Image 1: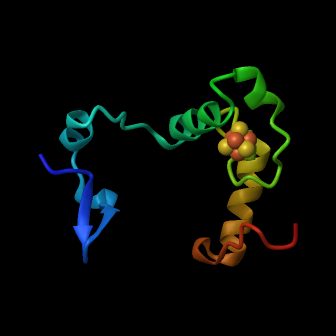
Image 2: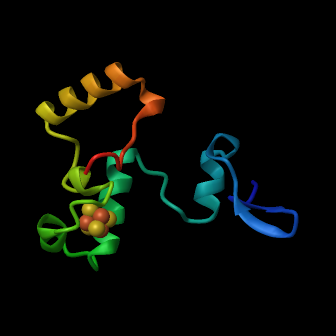
Image 3: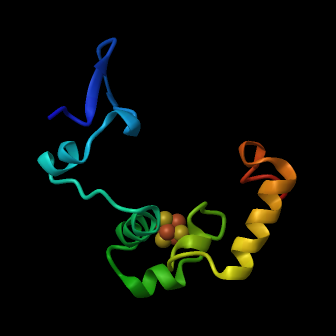
Length: 98
Ligand code: SF4
Protein backbone atom coordinates (compact mmCIF):
# COMPACT_ATOMS: atom_id res chain seq x y z
CA UNK A 1 0.00 0.00 0.00
CA UNK A 2 1.34 3.41 -1.02
CA UNK A 3 0.19 6.79 0.14
CA UNK A 4 -1.93 8.72 -2.35
CA UNK A 5 0.53 11.57 -1.85
CA UNK A 6 4.19 11.63 -2.64
CA UNK A 7 7.19 13.84 -1.97
CA UNK A 8 8.65 15.65 -4.97
CA UNK A 9 11.58 17.94 -4.31
CA UNK A 10 10.41 18.53 -0.75
CA UNK A 11 6.82 19.23 -1.79
CA UNK A 12 3.94 16.90 -0.97
CA UNK A 13 1.89 16.34 -4.13
CA UNK A 14 -0.92 14.03 -5.25
CA UNK A 15 0.14 10.86 -7.05
CA UNK A 16 -1.02 10.42 -10.63
CA UNK A 17 -4.24 8.35 -10.48
CA UNK A 18 -2.81 5.85 -12.97
CA UNK A 19 -0.14 5.06 -10.38
CA UNK A 20 -2.66 4.31 -7.61
CA UNK A 21 -4.51 1.11 -6.72
CA UNK A 22 -7.93 0.56 -5.10
CA UNK A 23 -6.21 -0.65 -1.92
CA UNK A 24 -4.49 2.73 -1.56
CA UNK A 25 -7.87 4.47 -1.36
CA UNK A 26 -9.31 1.88 1.00
CA UNK A 27 -6.31 2.17 3.32
CA UNK A 28 -6.89 5.92 3.64
CA UNK A 29 -10.68 5.54 3.88
CA UNK A 30 -11.17 7.64 0.76
CA UNK A 31 -14.09 6.61 -1.45
CA UNK A 32 -13.22 5.72 -5.04
CA UNK A 33 -16.15 7.12 -7.03
CA UNK A 34 -17.25 7.14 -10.65
CA UNK A 35 -17.11 10.59 -12.26
CA UNK A 36 -20.82 11.40 -11.91
CA UNK A 37 -20.83 10.37 -8.25
CA UNK A 38 -17.66 12.39 -7.63
CA UNK A 39 -19.24 15.48 -9.15
CA UNK A 40 -22.36 14.98 -7.03
CA UNK A 41 -20.24 14.54 -3.91
CA UNK A 42 -18.32 17.74 -4.71
CA UNK A 43 -21.53 19.71 -5.22
CA UNK A 44 -22.99 18.39 -1.97
CA UNK A 45 -19.77 19.35 -0.19
CA UNK A 46 -19.98 22.80 -1.77
CA UNK A 47 -23.58 23.21 -0.51
CA UNK A 48 -23.18 21.93 3.05
CA UNK A 49 -24.77 18.62 1.98
CA UNK A 50 -28.05 20.25 1.03
CA UNK A 51 -29.56 18.62 -2.06
CA UNK A 52 -31.92 21.55 -2.36
CA UNK A 53 -29.04 24.02 -2.50
CA UNK A 54 -27.27 21.94 -5.17
CA UNK A 55 -30.47 22.04 -7.23
CA UNK A 56 -30.74 25.83 -6.77
CA UNK A 57 -27.02 26.56 -7.35
CA UNK A 58 -26.74 29.81 -9.33
CA UNK A 59 -23.01 29.43 -10.19
CA UNK A 60 -23.65 28.80 -13.88
CA UNK A 61 -20.00 29.36 -14.77
CA UNK A 62 -18.82 26.55 -12.50
CA UNK A 63 -17.54 23.74 -14.74
CA UNK A 64 -19.64 21.27 -12.75
CA UNK A 65 -22.89 23.19 -13.00
CA UNK A 66 -24.51 21.23 -15.86
CA UNK A 67 -23.49 17.99 -14.16
CA UNK A 68 -24.59 18.83 -10.62
CA UNK A 69 -27.81 16.80 -10.70
CA UNK A 70 -26.37 13.70 -12.33
CA UNK A 71 -25.51 12.61 -15.84
CA UNK A 72 -26.01 15.20 -18.57
CA UNK A 73 -29.42 15.11 -20.27
CA UNK A 74 -29.35 13.35 -23.65
CA UNK A 75 -29.65 16.54 -25.74
CA UNK A 76 -26.65 18.11 -23.95
CA UNK A 77 -24.59 14.94 -24.38
CA UNK A 78 -25.34 14.99 -28.10
CA UNK A 79 -24.24 18.63 -28.35
CA UNK A 80 -21.07 17.85 -26.42
CA UNK A 81 -20.28 14.94 -28.76
CA UNK A 82 -20.77 17.17 -31.82
CA UNK A 83 -18.51 19.85 -30.33
CA UNK A 84 -15.82 17.32 -29.45
CA UNK A 85 -15.91 15.85 -32.95
CA UNK A 86 -15.72 19.27 -34.56
CA UNK A 87 -12.88 20.59 -32.41
CA UNK A 88 -11.10 17.46 -31.24
CA UNK A 89 -11.57 16.54 -27.60
CA UNK A 90 -8.24 17.97 -26.48
CA UNK A 91 -8.92 21.35 -28.06
CA UNK A 92 -12.09 22.03 -26.10
CA UNK A 93 -12.05 25.48 -24.53
CA UNK A 94 -14.42 25.21 -21.57
CA UNK A 95 -14.39 28.94 -20.80
CA UNK A 96 -14.37 30.28 -24.36
CA UNK A 97 -17.09 32.68 -25.51
CA UNK A 98 -19.25 32.69 -22.39
S1 SF4 B 1 -22.08 23.48 -9.61
FE1 SF4 B 1 -22.63 24.75 -7.87
S2 SF4 B 1 -22.83 23.32 -6.18
FE2 SF4 B 1 -21.62 22.29 -7.75
S3 SF4 B 1 -19.48 22.73 -7.24
FE3 SF4 B 1 -20.17 24.27 -8.71
S4 SF4 B 1 -20.81 25.98 -7.42
FE4 SF4 B 1 -20.75 24.17 -6.10
